Length: 387
Image (cartoon, rainbow, N blue to C red; front, side):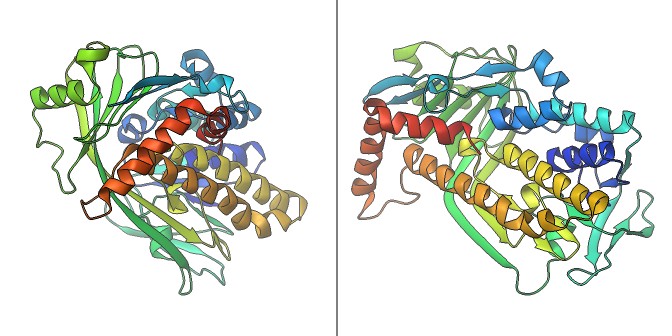
């Protein structure tokens, strides 16, 4: 088995196959240091934690992760909190930075004898959908190479070799939501004991704790904004304004140690199986970060694929592989639907037009319904934590 990509999907899959006695290798174009430090999301759904625990992969998050179950909404009409951990199915998030989870998974895989070829860039997957497949690569020294296997798992993202190698007839669903965020990592303790969502006429602002010393902030910005366009003084002034710090309390400040711009798009491929080639993680679907679903979908898909491959390779049962795409897409589209709802809740229309006032009135009504309706709150909690 060849696995492309050493992110959450690829490393969970690799660990589960290794524990089942299935030979596999992970090909990763980045360096070990980059893989262990690239910051991504940090909110793990309850089902994700259960999957990791079920397979003995949760030691780090159990030692260092923190459960979380509250979010706060701030608007021009006031603020309110939802203790979503006590609503819906009563489930919590675990806050554990994704780079820490990836480091745990990588160490576990290598300690168990798993092979990772760093600096090896997959160029293309040949043979799909009829097989047998092979992966052409560019080795760390620049030489071309080729890996052959019975199956290939494309866990190498939306721009990776797996997606570039999909056969004609593959359906790609794509939507650009017209919303961009300036994503910021500050060496500052959290200013709220909740996830903060601020809706302001100047745009959205978000507050998400990562560790007791580090906080993730988001600021809605114009499409095409450079990550370095805003000096730190402007960033903190805009965060204070949009999060209404004068009214609800000051934000803890600290140096901005990381910044980047996120353009909100949704992108789903159907099907996720093409003969011996399977897609998982961001190679299968890209989702807006507004509801923190990406890493959680990746872990879920990795477990489904590992179970199906084990059934086929160890027990001769191919039913799971035949159903893999349909099962994953059910979860993917549910997550996409909720993410779209969150985007409409937190952002106005991307461009002013004759219907802007209508859309903003609907948004205020959604927010008021979330504040006052227990039925809506239970629905929110179930979908906010679920995948």
